[in-house]
Amino acid sequence: MIIVLTGIDGSGKTTAAHDLVAAARAEGTKALLLSNYAGRRRMSLLGARFGVRFPSQLADAAETVIRVANVLVSHARARQFPGLVIMDRHLHCQLALRRTRGLPRGRLLPRLIGALPRPDLMVYLDVSPERAHERIVARGTDEESLDDLRALRDAYRSLPEYTDFVKIDADAPPAEVLARLTQTIGQACALKV
Image (cartoon, rainbow, N blue to C red; front, side):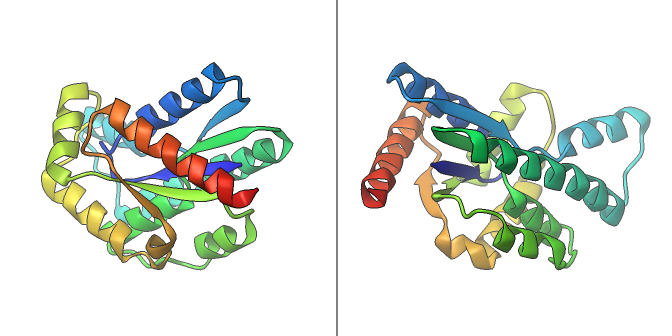
């Protein structure tokens, strides 16, 4: 079973992914965490360090190459794994970022989404931009403005694929988010049997 977690920065994707894998393993289920990052945080930190702002199209091109490579490797690994696979991010994340930058969807990412095995569950961790911003400030490893987080939330919601996402309220503490995710995955497993 493949579960994909998406959502704006600060929604708790990585925390939820780690928590899900740990909970599954604690119950004796084989579980694998696969991260599909695009290197955006590293590029923004590098740009800030050297006082450089990468043009939107250049940043998107670099991120797309990294994200596509990670997603393809993740799907290859998932195909070989006999258990629960949790993917932290997917190609939809890049499509949402493109919208925030005013860039077109393009053809490659939608075609890849259609060609790759469909995840059993696409979860959107729905968090308010204000709460997400608080979390980002608290972790102190990167920066996102409240306006950027609002734009990213709106971009996700405008994706045609968004209607197929299962929405989980991620404003709650991590333990509550984990409980909701576990329940949702359990229901999806029951339907699959």
